[in-house]
Every structure is written in C-alpha cells, then in structure tokens.
Length: 167
Image (tube, rainbow, N blue to C red):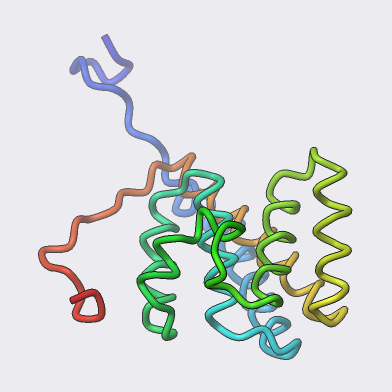
C-alpha cells in the first residue's frame, strides 16, 4: 500500500511550486540566457531547435510539447521538427544550426570528450564566440528545466485538435 493509504502511487512534488525561489532564479537565468542569445545573433528558431534537441535527449515530454509549439510560432517547419532527431542525416539544417546542434548534444552529454572537441571545432567554423557561448548556455538552461519537469512529472495535456499550423 502506498504512503497515501489508498493503494495508488504517491504523487510527485512539483518542485517548481515547492521551492518557488529556486525556480524563480532558474527563470531569471533563462531570461538572461535568452537575452544573450538574441544579442549574439542566434535566431529564435535556432534557440528552439536547441531547446527541442536537449529535451529529446533528456526525455522531457513537457518541454518537448512547449518548445514544439514555440518553434512553430517562431516559423519553424513541421518537416524540420520531424527530422530533428536525425539532423546529421539530412540537409535540412544550415551549417550554423548544425554547429549549434552538435554543441547542444556535447553539452547535454559531456562524457564524450571526442564529441565535445569535434563539436567545438565545427562551431568555431560556423559561429561567433558569442554564439558559441549562447548556444551552450541555452542547452545548459533547458537541461535544468528538463530535470525540473521530469522529476516533477509535469503533465502534457492532449490537444483537442491539431494546431492550424500543422494542418
């Protein structure tokens, strides 16, 4: 029997609600990172591709849902979103997007030093120093949000109908 006495699994604590000061600090960090990305010249779709790729790697359904909608609003195509997991195998992404995505993966899984070096070398050819820094910060920040949502089991509500941009 669960600690709740009704036989059901215990509810997860929404840690963003349980510790609002900590979550607010993460939101403020995200706002600073977003401003740095804009100042560095990373466009909104690239930022959302980073957010989505990290969320895919971390298995965060809440962030995948949120950032898919944001990417579509920013003008991203459903086709590119559909092939994002296989971005290396398609010509659908620009050299700067590919560099940002390689940095994203290296940041999300920092245990592969060869992949880190390769990603950084690629990024040096396609991105400015400010863009490299911003892309890494975007990946770090969404990774933190992923962990908040995954550990809290934030729910994803089913849409009643497909958004107009997908029709």
